[in-house]
Length: 147
Image (cartoon, rainbow, N blue to C red; front, side):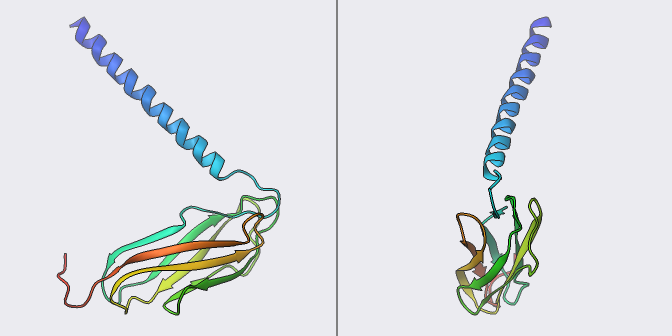
């Protein structure tokens, strides 16, 4: 009985230690990704939005969330979709250091089929005055089977 208990405890301890190491690695990777920049900075939570498979004329609005990881205010001067079917919106006011902001994008889901489009963000971010974001997915036709 003692051997079974000891084996169970070693298994739990090994799993906990392994999980702690993975968490530490993830935290270090996140810290490196959000390192402070001297000047304005911009770091996106994700640079790609995957709509997946969506219905014809479904809601095409999505959001890119970003953080100013710099020491100066971030100013978004322009956002441009790669075509008329992709309409981005951006904050008009400067984003303070450490603050979050949102770049909205609306894809015209009246167009059937697969799509991959980009949004070009122009800002005063140090070292990356332009940033390319991607949206992708597939719009089903009206005759597609419903799941």
